[in-house]
Image (cartoon, rainbow over all chains, first blue to last red; front, side, top):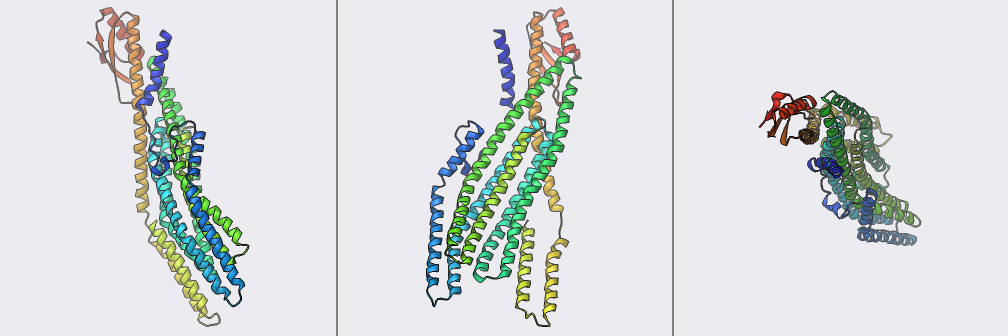
Length: 346
Length: 157
């Protein structure tokens, strides 16, 4: 009976902090909730559920994308048949073909650019809500310096990346599309050079932002992690200086709180990771499938199509690649920061 | 960011205009070197002039806002942990006193008052119950010696 009472007392002590000290992950965005599992089992199983759920919802987009690709192949094949007749100016036919391909691809590309922007905004908003919760949980676990550094880095880079995408990369993507159409239609090398410069600039912006972010996290992680670990050790040593009974009680209580804060931080982090992936995966698959199908279409069309037309299809697939990179970079930034929060004090 | 976008667009537009002007000029013309020079000067002005107007006050205030928010989130977490630690310490100290009282055959109720330090420490205690003077004296001594709460901070009712 006495043992049972002791076990109950210990259980109450362990449970108490979890009930009182609550760190709740912000709810996943509406578009992600349909991909999220109803009941959480394990991280791997939940992740697999999200992937399967997103793939199941892909069918209408796949049909639409296939329709566009078949139309492209039909147009290019028709033009190649026309070109085989004598008396038709090759240049005019090529121009008409390039413009037809552009008309077929502009509308889907525009809607996918909007989808990309929307996804980045949703991810960014979610990241802004998740970061304070993770910061508080990590601070409760003793990582005061680490959590401050991680919060500052995550919010600053998140804001910089989101602004970079919405104010710079998106207008540049539109300019890139226009330059692709113009350069393929007119065959002007100057336009090609400007187009290549814009392509380089967009790639460089995304790459450099993620390099800087990971660099910042690596350096601050080591420095602030060591500072926090030392602070926790110093606090534990200080407890020994108290009156023995109180010292032991304080030491046990602090340990219990640190452990429960760590457990809560991990559960919030896992939910956050799943919510970020669930928000990102559907748009990623939608854009990714278009990217892949356009690449395949370009390869098929290269058998009978003109160099400019096939090049234009490849350029449009490149545009899809930029949208993928854009959403992928934002998602990666949030995943890395959440994992760093979860890693906590070393 | 709006300024960066404007800057890049103006550089791209300037480069396009310069390239078009140079390409339409006859290469054998005597004006060609002059036009190239003017185009170069125009390009240099477009690239350099916005940097002279650059102000970093906005960036500084933005980062200071982030730091304030970070401090607030950290304070929230540490306060929450400190409060929880205080609650556990309070309940354990009370349980310890009740245990000691029952070991000497006294039945009492105890309420520990915590201070605001980090971690919170017991600073005073309110004990109610009927005790023999000997038991009271012994318990007072135990609380003072083992829990560090001086006799003057112990209130008995």
